[in-house]
Length: 458
Ligand SMILES: Nc1ncnc2c1ncn2[C@@H]1O[C@H](COP(=O)(O)OP(=O)(O)OP(=O)(O)O)[C@@H](O)[C@H]1O
Ligand SMILES: [Mg+2]
Image (cartoon, rainbow, N blue to C red; front, side, top):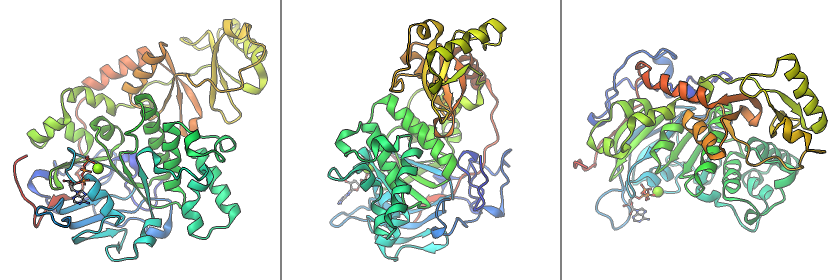
């Protein structure tokens, strides 16, 4: 993983922002134990990248923000103070109507706070021009929120166009982003949203939000409208994009499992934007702050911890591969040669993965299937059992179950082939993850409600 020069809060490092103060009672940091992976201390102050540095994430500080909608007595969000470390992914969860969307939209001022201030990097953005601000903050909503009368390219290029980029630069950027979200630019740039699947629309929504390379990405239930398998793939993709780009991501979800999977930190809200617990997924699962959190997590907290174990942490084995351009005869010969020499990897010794020119898996055939082929099918096999290396072991198991195979192909950044993982490996890894000892927890970021917040027991 590349270094993050702007701050230590790389997404997978679960690096906290040291608060230097004890947060509110409900959200007290679970302790100041040193972490085994990251230093803690003064280098983690709120010094995210300057907002215009592009690319890498900037820290966000919500300082006692309150939103009271006109005609309402109680605030939708009351006196919320919350630190979002640069380059981290923070998931906002809680029951319907608790103020998640309100909180998110106050960050890019689609909703103006009634009170309080918001600091992005080093800059107070509470009063800055909202249009300018929104160009520095990508925003992804459910079903992509694409303009139906505009092509994919035009949708993605909206903000760069507003920023006055020249045509070539916009076109290059569009192709680069399509590539990043695993859609072939030649195939998709000219399509209209209605010619895309739900998952593809969502990918375009993410690409559009990233177009002007903003340091911050806000997402409101981005994967709520797609089927479970597509959702899993989109989640994996987001994790892999985030590993590359290290944005600061604030994401609302209804799905606690999604929060566990994607979040470096999870903020659990109760009504009125009351922050009940703000901590790492591990800590919330192991030490829910109270009954409200426990109920919210639901049953099977132990099982949910398995969502934290990644494919990359398990053994990924080699498999035979052959370039798609070489055709089936060459693939079959490579397979037979390896079998004769005894070098075909155990577990997948009777199959070969076919890769495109960019090392992405497109087919997976047995010797028997290859014998019957005179040419590879033009289209990549959409049903290949593929999991990203950052996918959870649970996801890997699901993928194998859905496609009834005992192996899945593992891919890394930009869908490049890494190897295969077998069902036994997954089962073993799940068993050992279950019995693994508790790791030392990093301190959680600052998060509390002060001021006009109603403290009622949820
Ligand atoms: N424009 C508005 N005018 C008045 N009240 C509003 C407005 N928008 C939201 N609210 C109220 O503010 C509270 C918080 O709403 P918000 O949309 O932030 O909730 P949420 O946590 O995102 O819920 P959901 O999970 O259902 O999306 C709710 O009680 C809602 O009814
Ligand atoms: Mg909402």
